[in-house]
Image 1 (cartoon, rainbow, N blue to C red):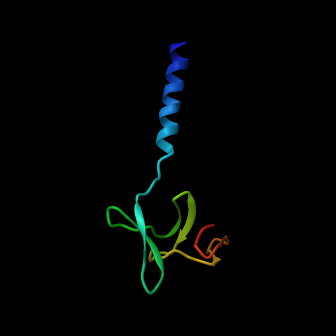
Image 2 (cartoon, rainbow, N blue to C red):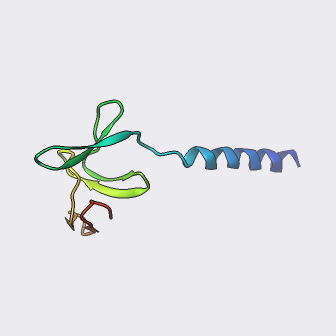
Image 3 (cartoon, rainbow, N blue to C red):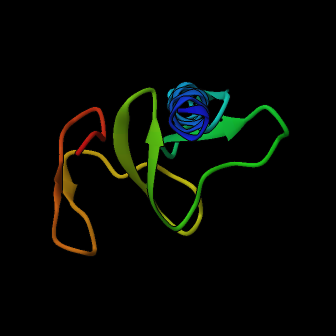
Length: 82
């Protein structure tokens, strides 16, 4: 019984911990396009990343691909979301 209760508690804690956003930060824009800057000043680059519950593809230089097909063949909309 103790083992089941402990498993249930640990499972609940893990579920709660995984529900938090992986990155905290904000979207930025310049003449070239949009990128996502983390709170620590770094930015997302080189592939797929989840932001605000949606998946976005970021180029090697950090810009979000929008309204196109990604290098791995997926289509992203005008906002850059998959």
